[in-house]
Length: 425
Image 1: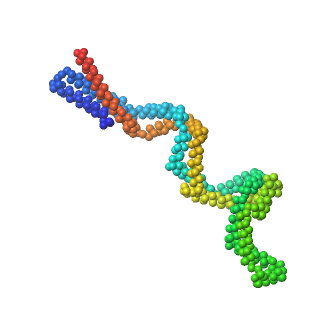
Image 2: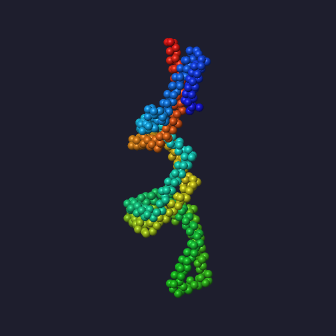
Image 3: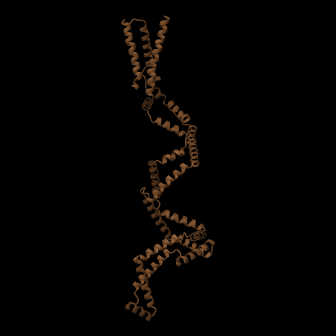
């Protein structure tokens, strides 16, 4: 109904003019006052037609001689219209000053934090982290990277006073008792090695080799070994089991007692070694330097680094497979922790706001013309018909009121003029 207001008002005005003109001419209505009504409908018809022409001329060509060149105004003046829109948008509505002032009024960091805390956004953000890390580790096992890392580590380590640093760290760790965890690992590894059947076989081989070597020293010793084996005086297998059993008991004692003699003696030796390293004692320092040199010159060092990188890559891939892994739970925890800390840190929010404003202002000063270019390019993609249709779709309804108002105002003015004429006549 709203789209047809202009047409309906014009139809009513014209129909009223025809109807009352016929009634007056046929003397059905013969009072002078009816001329005033006719004048009103006549003026309303003229006003309605005039505004119909004005509105229609904006959007399409009106095939009236001499007048048609002033119709289809939007299509014919699209370049001027485009320039005007671009100027309005870039220099008025979205000028650099307007945008900067608006940014100053908004706590952007607070809005960003609230946005990032939404569960669905959090999930998407973490997914981005997963994809990014997976992209970064694609070439992690590349042999060239292992070679480069070896060179880098070698160069860096050679420039470091590693002996003094290691000595100070060892001394501090031993005095604080931090090295006990290393002891636990060594003891557990030793216990597992003893329980391994291969260890018993290896020890038995060594005992048999030692017995054979002892027997080769003389005929008497060889005879004694032979006799001991035959009479059961020496049972190498039992001997191997007993040795492993005693070793295991020793390990259990050492694990349970941090003051165990062997641990204490080793601690004293290690502390003495650490003190020598920290003081720069030449012999100890030389030992570390030789170790570093041996690592850097070892042909297998690059292979070791390569294997470490391959293992690290596989571990990362497994940890990034889903959100339930330890790594992803840690990422999620840190994500929420960072956002919570930012939410409570007003000073940091202000710094972020200033950074955003300064960055946006700088970008606006350099690329502000791109806003106008985007508007211009968007309009350029539309042909005349599409442009007219889009504008008409947005403002066409309101323009119908212009046609309605033209008929109403024209009718009122016509009645007023007719009254004036009648009063003067």
